[in-house]
Image (tube, rainbow over all chains, first blue to last red; front, side, top):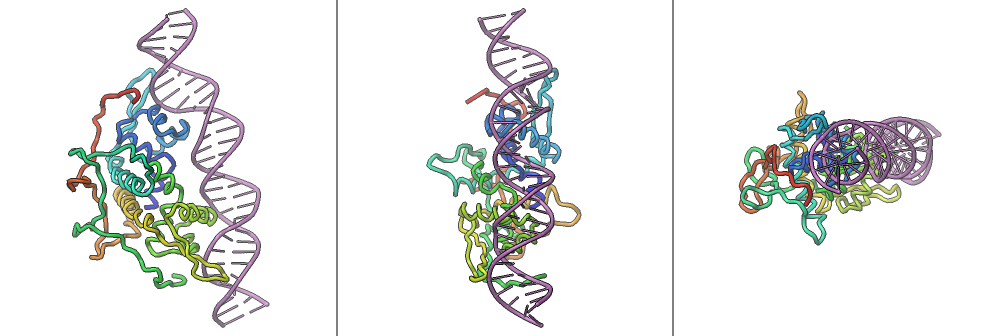
Length: 138
Length: 138
DNA sequence: CCGGTTCGTCCGAAATCTGGACTTACGATA
DNA sequence: TATCGTAAGTCCAGATTTCGGACGAACCGG
């Protein structure tokens, strides 16, 4: 998890990934939509390309223009985005509901569910009791 | 999602939350395990308490000592953590496998699965075709 | 008394982020 | 032809964060 955050935990990184999921692949469009400083976004796009999450494709030369696409690794970030949105919607949304919703082919919103990897049963959060054994050092 | 990241997207924040899930509720223990600067971690714990994710409980006075517990909102971050770990394990792990694993009561590791909110069907990533319609503003 | 533990704070240095101006190269408009 | 708009950045100086390490207070055990 620490490794994930090294790649994806920098400011604006996940927002940029979300934009590409929403179909906004161009620099200026992302700047407009997420409001990041151009400088920072440019740096972030570079690191995400280096990390193998985006692929940078030229769509015009002379005025050299580029678009960003998700690699397979990038597409696998989808659940992260949905999960984060889900938490924000539950705990942080104000009167105005969630602005952007990702939808299933049936038209209903998507969510993630915690399940056991082998038995497939939905799971609840394992919570350690308040007074657990506390070993001083080891 | 942007709102989620404002709360939880700062450096070390999710690592600290993970530590509490793992039962490490004390300042020094977190510092040792995640390697954050003490200063930064102290600041982060404050913001997480302010955000209603942690609750700070005193477990001894005179040398005033505190532990951090998850609120309900904090416990709801569990899927976020699992999802992030899942992505890192798939795309970033080296020869040595994932170090910390969260387990189901049956002893198997947990994962999250993308499903439709209403029909419950597993979903795959919706991917917009390369040359989607591009409307300038809306 | 001495060392160890715990939970921080304080400090100056380093890294990162920020907003805005600027650049280059078109195409469209007047 | 001059000007406007768009696109994808770069450059810069200043603000904000993070960093590592030293320090302090308050206890405990020997």
